[in-house]
Image (cartoon, rainbow, N blue to C red; front, side, top):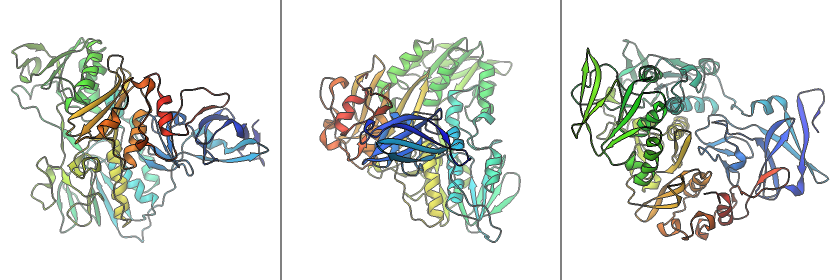
Length: 574
């Protein structure tokens, strides 16, 4: 029963008997009508917010390893003792609550406001005018945002300026692609007043055109300039340009800003849409428009969508999903020409000579680093224009860091080979590491890339870096759209993806994060499918737990004592 305490807004509630919860169990209990996550680890109880602050996933279905809890949907990690973020994409922490055990009964004490919010924002410092240092952040995406917030969370009191060429505060681009009807303001990750309260200056419509690294000064398109003590370049990426006759016709659209998406949604209603490129952004756009446009056609040079990233098996599953929703695919061909009337596109001609009706053309042909303004400078970039950084996000120029889509960095899962990874979670991790190293914390990047793509209400989750994979191992059923797939390079797993098998990818992410190497033979355990599988003993991580599908008496709990056994029980439905 919940009771008031000392006249304040603190509530204490009995939630269960001590014997109800075994070691390693994750249980969702109720306190004054609000869900709370109760965790028992090494026989010690912790209580914290039950939903991931990112998109609201139930953390009772997540993966627990020691004091680290990983979200089952998008891989965010939290410390169960403090509620602090240990891995993105969540920006906010979890509230923690006091747990007491008296005469075999478990009580949780919490403030009403914390129960109602379910999230906790870290305390931050503010600017002190006695600190003359200025950190200039170029870009208004998640890398710059997390860098700014981390600086304040770590006690930096100098000036922080975030300069972006966009009109908006940092917003959730991944959600924008999947829900094109949302307004930009509804997608803001942090509202302007949140940034202002932490003395983070946001300069919108402020595009950098050059940098003088010797004078430590950035010049902007409007003619102004700004000096810095430390600089973060997080200008992201931009859509590749279309190089065919007719590319300059009206209604040939890039997918870059909220305004672009609003325009496409308006133009596409009841019209013929051609999507050029079966990339993630192209496929998500095709899926979203499939019930809004008169017809949607996808033109792709490979045989399957996102073939180089997810492979032909998963690409084939996604293509069939969209085909069943009326989307037509023209694969192993390229767009050759666009034709129009009165300056507007009307027709797309592909390699076979076939003419596709096209009132709107949407480009999903990949992205390039937005680093053109650095041409002629001494900063190191690769052939694509990506800025070269080390694991501290440091460039070859002192006091200059870079993060997010604009960089190429050493990837541990590729044995240190450099790569550009355009995922939100990676960009956030980069921003945090850059901030810590600006403050001389000497912190190296240690993360497992995690991303997701959603089409027609179904999400594929992916962890790792499968670049250059040469083989795959599939568990479950591609046809039934319930599967886990491993990507193999040089005999070892470098990535995994799943559909309808949560939290399998989160579990694999924790195995990879621990530094364990999974061989192809270990990935291909058993032959009876997922129903009767057990993990190889070499995968076992001490103190790691995932949910069990078995039910328990109140409260609802998830548990395992060994990773191998829990892996078997977690998803018999797969």
